[in-house]
Structure formats: structure tokens, C-alpha cells
Image (cartoon, rainbow, N blue to C red; front, top):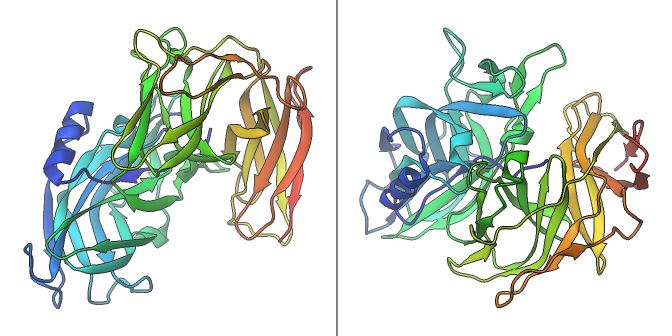
Amino acid sequence: MKSTFIRLGTASTVAAAMALAACGGGGGSPGANSVTNPGTTPPGLGGTSGTLNIALTDAPACGFDAVNVTVSKVRVHQSATAADADTGWSEVVLAPARKINLLNLANGVLDPLGSVSVPAGRYTQVRLLLDPNTANGFANSVVPSSTKVETTLETPADLKTGVKITSNFEVVAGQPYNLVLDFDACRSVINKAGGGYLLTPSVSAMAAAGSGISGYVSTLVSGSGVVVSAQQNGKVIGSTTVNAATGAFAISRLNPGAYDVVFVGTGRAAAVIGDVSVPGGASNIALGTSASPITMPASLMRSVSGTVSLLPLAPSVKPYVAAMQTVTNGKTVVIQAVDAAAGTGAYTIGSLPLGAPQYATYSASAPLVFSSAAPTQGVGNYRIDAVATGYSVKSVSPVNVSNGDQTSINLQLTP
């Protein structure tokens, strides 16, 4: 399923981030040196500078037991078009560079990287620099769940100057600012046609402050690879995996608003909690407790596969394909989603429940009551959506998996 991004972020201070990381078992102690390039305001609070705090966290990555990256530096600039050699960069340098397993940082766990004094103002570019693979080739690597063997994660040559991330945040003089970079590990690790794995980073930036949703899934189902996502208008805003042993989950840094929270897992029908109202500030909405957790009934599973073609051709573009269902009152949610392969457009969406989703409307004052919510088009029916940057959305509906897996569900995207 689509997840949301590798997150680089902080609590209100690096110390707070360290405490959170320690609580969640984040990897390693920070070894960061804070540096500013010549010509910038000298380090220190007050005057015309503020403090930028940076830490690391992650969302789920599909099909891997580990996704390792070796972080060497984070750079920020007030110009979105600043080149690597331009003046005006401020940076946090990790000395030595640190290898981090991103999958240890799910459910809001933070791994602090460091902080730096920066000139006050608005920042529109962030770069995350990774060490290249040398010697044994395992600076950046993955451990596929299928093999349990650490394998090199190839980094493209154009990443030498860092992963360029468009951003828009403001540092106020005399104050700290806490940044979250959200790096989607699931969408960023690509299976190469000839074998091996390639890193094609998908990263976004956001403020660390925000509310969240947390809770518990029954331990009877938590070992089924359950993924929890917060969605708005049929789009995944944030997601996480549950702790297989305890069933606990947490989705952090959500903007105020109403969300549909969707639970999916192998061999289980989906569960949907509609209209979960997340207030502003640092509020947390609890869905289920350890004593009264959310459960999901057993279900047969199906798959849908095919290709997404682009006209005109764009070999480097990866279409995104989602299996959608309308569960109640016209509310449409993503059940599963994947990226199609760049170039070929091939995709397979597995783990689609044949059973009807279970639905409950959120209430802060009453227990959640779930009931079967047959999709509008009938049990076992899905709408398959495909979208790619620069192309219009294309849908195929209904796709019925009641009698078995569906193949050759092909879509063509045009501008």
C-alpha cells in the first residue's frame, strides 16, 4: 500500500526529539556538527538568526525488513533555485555519516540529526545528502522480506548534490523551527528490471508541529501486516504500520480537519472510521484502546494487475494506481495502492479484500460501532484509478474480483 514518506523532523527542540527517539528505540546517537557558510549570519540565538532543528522519522516501507540510508548532511537555502556551489547555504553535517534503518522509526519515532543557526527568513529549498555506496556497497541498502539478505540500494549519480526538496517555511529571529521531511520509502525503492534495487527518492517537507491519530488494533490481527492510513477525499495524507506485538499505531503531524481512517491487512476485510475530526494544536485522537482494540474480520484476498501506458511516452514517470471503494454516504477511500513500474507501466495491486469493509462513524463520546458497509457497486467491486504527473486521472469501474484475480486491467493516460 502507498505509504507517506521518510520523515525528517523534530520536536520543539532537539532535546525533545532525542527523548522521543529514545522512547521509540530510534537508531544511534547524533553526531552532528552545525555549520553555516561564509556570508551568513553568525551562529547564535537572537539578532537576525533562529535555530533550525532536524531529526529523522519514517513511514512504512512495503516488502522490506530494513531500508538503510547513510545520512551525511542536510542543507537549507532561502532560494529555490540555488545551485550546489552558491553561497547562502546553511547545513547540518553528521560526522561521521550515520547509517539509519528507516523502518525502526515508524509510528512517530524520531531520530535527531542535529541543529544549526540560520538567518531569519523564508526557506524554499532543502537538500538531504546520502553517502554513496563504496567498499562493501552497503551504505544504502535494503533487506527484502522474501530473502532476509542485505542487498545494495543503488543511488543514481544525480543524487551527489543531494535529494532536492521544495519547501516553504519561515525561521523567525530568536526562535527555533522544527522541520519534517517526509520520504516515502515504499515509493522510493524500485525493483530494477535486471535485478537489484534503485533509490528514487520521493520526499516532501512539512512543519513538525501538528496533531495526530493513535490507537490499538487487536493483537489477533496485528500480525497480518496491518497498515493504517488517514485519508481526505480519497487521498492518503499519512499512514503507518501497527506494532505486530502490541497492535499500537500512531500517525503524527496531521493538519486540522476531518479524516477517514482506513485499516487494511492481509487476510482481513478493511475497516473504515469516517469523519475523524482532528483539531489544531498538538491534540491526539485515540481510536481504540489496548482493552478495546479495533478488529477486522477475516476475508479472502484478490489482486488486480495490468499496465498503465502514457501518451505521450515518458519513460521516467511512475504512474500511481489505487484500488478504491465507496463505502457509505458517497465516501470513497483507498483500499490499496502501488506505483506502476517506470517505463513499462506494469502494476499489481495485491491483498484486496473480497469481504465488505466494516464502517463506523467517529464519535469522541461513544464507543465505535462497526457494521458491514457493502461498496456502492457491490461486494468485491473496486474502482481502479491511475494518475501521473502531467497526465489526467483515468478510472476503470467496476472491476469485480468476486470470482478471482483480475488481470489485464489496462489504462492509458493522456495530458
